[in-house]
Image 1: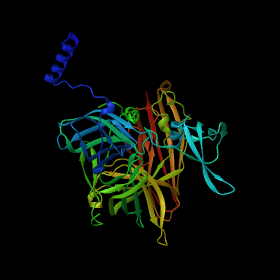
Image 2: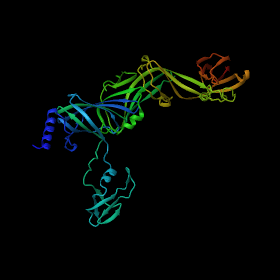
Image 3: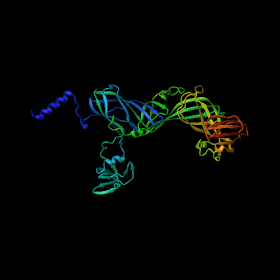
Image 4: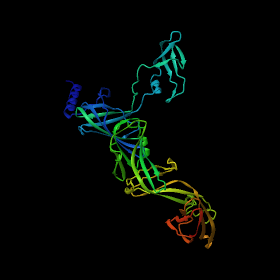
Length: 498
């Protein structure tokens, strides 16, 4: 035994004794395919984010092998994937992961055949019989996935632009797939079948809330129905899925989530009256679980009833804000505080609102996810008519909601600056305001008049013609009752100092 042979012998003995794994060529690895989903549960968040948990049956040989997991959403965040063998949790490890999304498309097919032989099926005009000619593809005519025209092929020694005939390709090129899939390099110590759990985050599954309210004749009660609208643009259909919805402002690092898409490579109804969703708590958020399983097909929008309240007590409120938000641009700005011309603007519109409380005795009483509320009312013929809509934010139980529906037609407001004085070298300012509210309706109304002492944070009321309330440091409220075809005037003077 020479020196080289002796060294090789001892090296082989050491490998066998120590159990050192020799590298396995990639091409010699066996490839398996995971079965279809046997169970899937979806948790969908407000922020175009969903957690997908699925179970599949997989069969793996002992040792290292490749595993294909088909029918994966095109919007998967590969960095979020978690795998577990429920049969033997310690037996299977995912060593590498590749997300494959190079799907079949005409442009990609033709690119793979550039410079190669293809066939064109043509028709002989005199006999209407088909015949085939062979040629070499020189240009596809595609720019990206958009066909721009100008396919070029070399046929019978001549170059043809936009050759006639039906193009036939010999086979599907390697690497192109029909649906997005995962390819794993796995290590397995238990031969045979495994029940596997796979969970991951994905985009393209979204939900939102929409509400429909029907006011009664005197605006004192309303019926409210809340709907969950589900939209699936993930690229995958989920059949017989469990469904949970999370409402709340969950923090998501948007830049990292968006950048992780497609980048995971080589890395570790019973009774109609019964509520369909059961609400529970999840951390500081609200969780709504559908009490049955459902199908959510790709490129589909589905609506499911979330809540229904009947005869919920409501109230119509009129609000007049003469500055209509303009004051927010000037508030506490020293450049404007002593300029009399600011604050002379007058908005004439009186807003009409409907308020109600999200409480159990009113037929509600569950946390309401944010969404759009559309309000209807029956006309004199008993037909429903649309009267306005507004957005609500996430609203806990027992909180009041206020919906802005539009502006009152028969109530007009008018605001005017009546006096402006400056004292103490410009360090004290007094401003007098007059507000008029005119009611042209056939019945008396109460209007909440809002005013804003915006010129400076230090102010005091010098005089007022009626009752008023300080809502906050920059908001005053004057409740005004106006009779039929009457006008009511509110006057006040406020003093600022700095």
